[in-house]
Structures are given as C-alpha cells and as structure tokens.
Image (cartoon, rainbow, N blue to C red; front, side, top):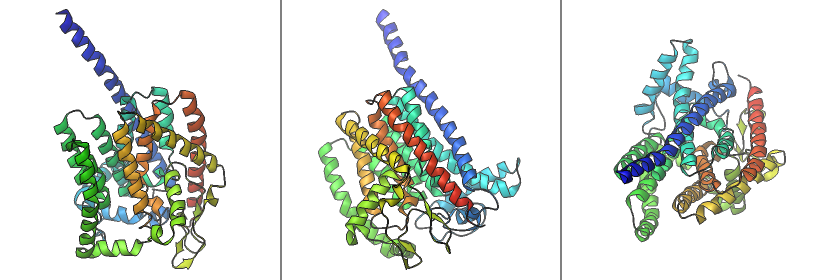
Length: 423
C-alpha cells in the first residue's frame, strides 16, 4: 500500500509542472490575443484608413480584398493557392463579425470579426510555444523575457492583419508543438492530419510542414526517414510541376512572382537570406516604395518595372543593427545547444530544414519575401526555445532586452510611415 501511495504521489508531482505549463501558456496566449488586436487597430485595421482602402500598402499585403472576400461575396482569384479560403474561413469571419455587431457599428464589426479570428489562431500558436517552453523546463522569468520579445517581432505587423498569414502562423506553430509534447500517438497523428488539411487549405505551400511532422511521428527508423526524405525531393518537385501545368491560377501566380535570385545573383540571395533570418525578429528601418506608389516595404528591387538599387544592409545602419546582431547571436547559440541535446536534436533539425527550405524557395520566388515570413518566423522562436533552457538568466536579459528596444523602434517606424499614406 505504501508503494502504491508513493507511486500515486509521484504521478501527481509529475503532472503538476504540466498544469503550471498550461496556466503559463493560457496567460501568454491571452496577452498575445489582446496585443494582436491592439496592434492590428494601431496599424490601421479600421474604417477610413489607407490599409483598408488600397492594396499593397503594408509589405504588399492585400488586406482590404481579403476582407471583401470574407465579409462580402467577392470571388477569390487564387482559389487554387488558398483552397479553403472561402469554403472554411469565410463563415467563422462572418459569425464573429455579426457577433461583434451587437456591440459596435457594422463598419467596425466587419473588420473586427476577421481580425479576431486571425488573432485567435496566431495567439494560440504563441500559447502553444509558451507551453513548449515550460514543458522543456525554461524557468518562468526567462520564458517571460523570450515571449515578451516574441510579441514584438517585426513580422507581427503582417501576422495581425486580417489575412491568411496569421492563421498559417498559428497552425504551423501548433503542429510543431503537438509533435513534441503529445504522448498519445493516435491523438498526435490525428491532430497533425487535421492541421495538414487546414494548413494546406489556407495556403497550399504550408501543407509541407505538417506533412513533415506526420512523417516524423509515424516513421520510427532513422535510416528509413532519411531515404524517404531524399525521395520526397523529386516527388515534391514533380508534383509542383504537374500542379503548375494543370492549374492556370497556380501557373500564373508562380510565373508572375518568380525571381530566380538564387540562380541569377547568389550574392543577392545571401543578402536576402540574412534579412529573412533577422527581419522577422528585428526588422531594419522600413521605407516607402516611391513617391507615386505609396506602400511600406523592405524590398526595393522592382517598382512597376523601374530599375532601383538592390537590397543591401544599409537599412540596418541604425539602432536596429544592435538588435539584429544580438538576435543572430541568441539564435545561433540556441541552435547549437538544441543540436547538442539528445532530447531536442530531432526537432532542432526539423526547424532548420524548414528554414533552409523557406530561404531557398523565397530566393527563387516572391518579390516581397517579408510578407511570407510568417510561415517560418515562428520556427526562429521555436529554435530559441529548444536551446534556451541551457542559457543563464543574465545572458538572456543582456540579449533580449536590447532586442526588444530595437523591435519597438521598428514597429513605431512602420506605424509612422503608414500614417503618412493618404487614404
């Protein structure tokens, strides 16, 4: 009887950190939800702003047309790229908008409903990552420092927009955490299968990561995993080529945005890759596209066919350079620790594979790759989490606090530029 009692007490003690982790995750998730809604409103997701009346105002986003499809009856011109956009996401947006209309005028409610839906998914992703941090044993104070900085990520300027980016960001984060923490294999695989459908239906390219998670969950043999991963490359390329040929929407979409930077200008591809590792966390000084075409951007390469200077590091020659360097130091150190630890090594490798894939893909396709960085920006934070438990409180404070200051500066600069754009 004594042994049974001890065993029961041990089981209760083992369950206690999970309950605390859930409480921490819920707290962080609620804070993230409130912050995302505030940030969206501050950036201009409200009636009468340039963001709601024009396209390509903020990093080439199409927020106003997404709202028209979700709340109105506009047809999607990219149904092959976002298959579930109208079939699935339109109805929750409308339901939340009608609920909000009980407390505010319809012109505000029609924007608040879609914003709330996106914020709920994005904040859930943040909450799941917060749970992972506590699950891996990162102390509460260090976790609070990390997630304070995560909420200030520059990429959140696009994550909070009522579009598909925040939804994908949250779903991808959740898939990764489910893979790591879900002990029940059937439940884990079922959840990952559901997220595969939702991620692929929201943005077709993002289906690859939850499939990758399912692959890691189901296949146990390391040798078989390597063989299948190698085989997946030609299969994936072949599938993309077939889809390109059978879908006019896909072919037009990819042909129009194809840049082939990696092949034509490897030096520029390197510059963009560094940007795509730093800018999602600590963005450089943003700038306007041109006096004639108003829009906040990080990509000066093409303004309607007019030749302009290519992207370089000069936009980091401000206070943001300090934050960018510290961010790279923090990221590199956490990746090193994550790869050395047997518990976290497989997941650190997965995160690196997803980031490398994203860097390669967006150096072949896309004009404003920062717009799509929400698909892998969460991975940067996940890699930090996988290694942060071995870092001292002092090291985290010395790196994270200056990073946060630089992040605030960048967000303020983005907001200031948006306010100069005429409605």
